[in-house]
Length: 175
Image 1: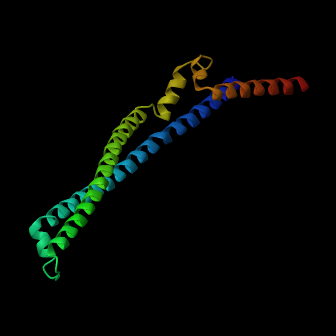
Image 2 (image 1 turned 45 degrees about the vertical axis):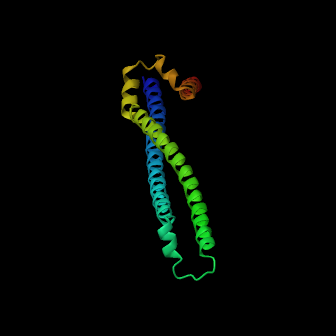
Image 3 (image 1 turned 90 degrees about the vertical axis):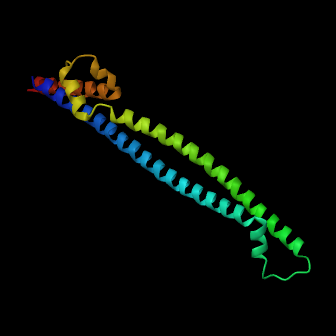
């Protein structure tokens, strides 16, 4: 009777350790999800900043705004100066639009990653808790085949139980 209770105690400890390891994974998935959401917010802010900058450059490229920006600059060739300023603004706008495209791609990838992380977090939260796992163990028979599902832990428990039985018989035989 004592051997069965020792074996049951060992099995409960093994399943509790297994449940504890699984219990950490949802927290990890949730933390991962939160990090991805924070990155997504950063990327969205950067995207909005680039959109605003591109809008500002478009506004600055209008002929009347180029004329106004060069009003205080004296030149013998104002047309060349205006063209130079327009090309300068155009290059800057093209660079901002290229950055914007990269940020949009990054945002789309992050959105997909967030959706994937939400699914993983949901699936991990749907796993049985350690208490539910212990209930599963107590419902199934001690010598049933369910404890083999947990891999090496079952074999370790079997070896430990065998060692305890062998040790107890050895002690009885020496007395």
